[in-house]
Length: 389
Image (cartoon, rainbow, N blue to C red; front, side, top):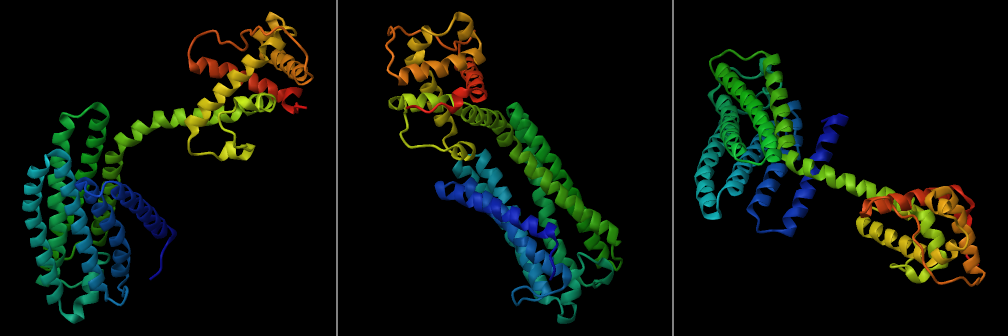
């Protein structure tokens, strides 16, 4: 069985998402919704390689092509049932959701029973053609009840789940907050596409049973619509979380950038006033760039340390800098270098602190912007090459 790069990418992404879902489940192992999500993603991820084997008519782990197709359908049905469970436990109280899930379990058990009996009764000579009929309808058996039942059991249950969950999604969207409502509407559109594809596949199964196989383009279009609908559905379900993460990501990126840009100013002040460091562990420039964890904490720490250092050096600036020097980043950076040299030389000055790099408006954001401007100026002047003696 050969694989394209798209097949490999699909499986890598699916297994990665499954690994993330399992990690979330490990944190709250008694959350039924997380179990449902793992079942949904796991069934979909594990069914894909089985589908590839069955479609090419080759064996998979010692099983023939039809057995691989059977295992694929079982996993897909269990994934669809997990989706039903997710909706029930997400929308109803636990006891009520359990009763509903018990009723829904009876439906999937019937579908699995029909699927199993049909698989066992397909003649040996038809097992490979029956496995590949989903890809090449013209070569598959026609008028064989067991083959038709095999596919109708799977496609019929998937159609039932798509219609039911689509209805629930539209119902929940009516009373949801705007962000969630948009996501649910997109998800319902994806489920509508899945339901349409499943309905076409059920009709092609009935047509085959009647002795007239469906044209290959119809089956291919249905499969494409099914996969597209799934992608749209998952995008809609992920939309509320992703939309809420965008503002947080912007803040994270800005803090990461400002933390890195403050380094020249922080370095010269920290060399002269190491006692102000809130973290005594040395931090290299590359670690600043590559740091991914604790960005907000390190950002606030660096802003505080820069401001404390400016307060300490401000008496020396008072004897060197004019009001104009204190107002502009470039002159202030040059005077800061001189003040640090005077401090290192032990020069005595009046211990009166003065405001340095004060923003025109209040707030941490404005204060940080002023410090960043000064840090950029320090980087462009000889102050960034100052080494405390």
